[in-house]
Image (cartoon, rainbow, N blue to C red):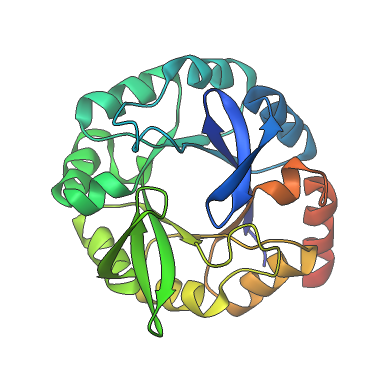
Length: 247
């Protein structure tokens, strides 16, 4: 588990952090900048901000809160949601984001991954994959889980790497918000199929869930949201626990 990272994810809607279960029943979790500052003080390695309503509303990410985050935090952070072209990506980078995440736009236009990687460098491009188990196979879902596809999550991850993605942010829709652990088989399959870093997301509820995903898969980072927002796990305590498990 050495060198594995802990990432806090903040889903943003109308400038506020929200959290739900399986992408539904969203409730307010606080101001994103205040939460970000708190996570930095706890020693989080990176932050991910996802403007979850941008794609459905067919708009670019709102820039104001990105600039606020950039002024307040001194660690790498990724912004996703509503980025459909080079111009929108450039605006997010100019606002201060270190990386961008693309999901539905990449499924609709896979060449966008290559265009972004060529323009900004592959290390700054994260392919977010939301996966749902359908008929014993993990399939890609888009638009906040509202639009199922026939794409295999593993095959799409491999193609994303070929097209130029520098990272995979892999979320199990089935596990999201359930607090019963990460989707280990899914995460293992994807992380073993690609040669780029994979971030495990969806399902963290206890500290041992992070240990399990690091022990049983090749994920280089594990992401938490509500488990951090509502104080179930302190990030500093979690990182100490993971170090002890390695001793």
